[in-house]
Length: 524
Image 1 (cartoon, rainbow, N blue to C red):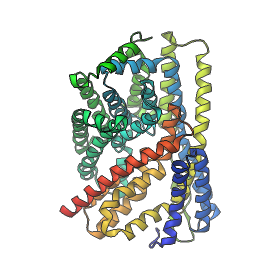
Image 2: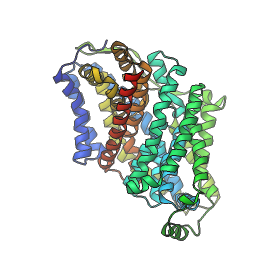
Image 3: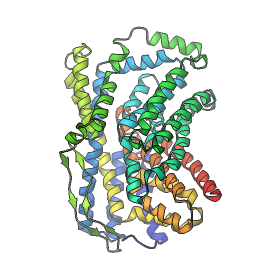
């Protein structure tokens, strides 16, 4: 039973763990591990002292967080391993050279990888994989590591909802009781606009207004095509394939546009490209083989019978009893996050690592001792990232299970009822930012947004679309996702600097979406 009223004091207390973590990571430039530890401690203290959470509730909340953390870390560990498998073979240099040969235009190179390719990867993979894969590719092309992580993060935000086999969209359908055919039109309309922002922001991030103007044609055409394809797939009920198909078509359009004289690059860029890429150590198809294998493995594992059933038979899961706080917040009994041992995205990346390593070794791409170096570098990088994820997910679960997260959204809706349309995407963004996933944001805040819109007489479908796009953007700028990207781009310990840029662009997108929602609700 949710809390029915919110005081200013309780709202500020519920907000404080998030504010403190942001202040430490963004303001003080602390690492995700140090900031996460402080936020975790504060969330536990407040949950017990101010929100009536007893030891039993906190115990189970942290058990749930361990399951969720392992769900995330399973991907981080093997995404990092895949990076080292590819990098040790020298394939990243060849891929970078291949993109450079496709077009010498630096802005177009950035868009192809950070926006189109990252969105395509989101369609077939999941948590953090696009930024973990794309950021080091951009670094290999000579883009700054900081810009690479931010561009890859924002670049695939629009593909989150219908990516990962549309898990976020299915969650919204389940929690609201609304049919997907009803939700899809407005949701894809919002995501189509987000798609354009996801292309424009990386272009602006590179060299400001000059590269933004230079990229307008490419962003308009590629973004328009990807948004249209996603819309058509979604409204016809093909939710699981909507982002994947949009990204695939987008890659074809981007390759065609790269041949236009406008995107051949300046003379200096063409000269640099020819010098850098004169003698690749292997062919581009061989260099790309790891990602081709990843695509094949994911498609087979998730879409080709009987593999989805076979791989998902063995699961790690725990059933949790009902818990409640002294203030009346109730967490119903049920299972925690289930982890498919052999069908999880992390397992699919592990299979890709093994197959790719065997292929690169067969082709003579490795020096002696490559396996040992890959393992050592993976372990070092994984240890730096794992503690941060454990603490931040523990904080998020303590807040959710004690009712603090719901208190934040309820306080916003009560205090700002008349302007709910404007803040609706921000509520979704808070959920995505805190939990790290659009799925969890929709589960936590979807019913609240739906019920509040009904009470206030607003168009429920528009409000839920705003919730969805907010959760998508919030998830890609969350600390957990930032840690994933930083771990493969050589920025471990500098997550706060990346988050500062991510937050600025995320708030900008949400402000536009909020204004759009307010206008649409007033007109419809």
